[in-house]
Length: 73
Image (cartoon, rainbow, N blue to C red; front, side, top):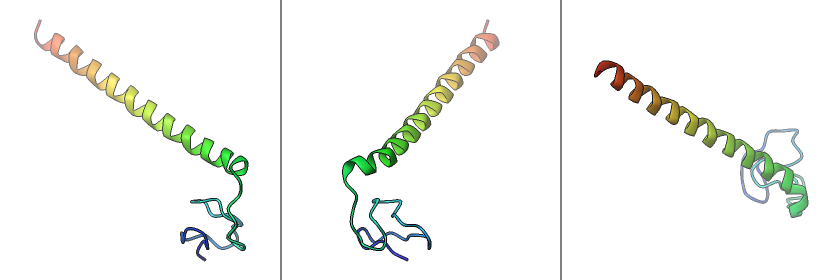
């Protein structure tokens, strides 16, 4: 099934489009206060991904500097 609002593929049985939040049967997009929890979850996931990547980069840089100091006393 496809969303009448944005054209995204929607799994059968779902009532709302995961991409735009529109009601799949009517094509009506909910108001901002209904979409807010969906948007908030996506923002939190994005922030967590960025934080994990930043921490991994910091750890990698730290390991490299540590190894450089150990190899060259």
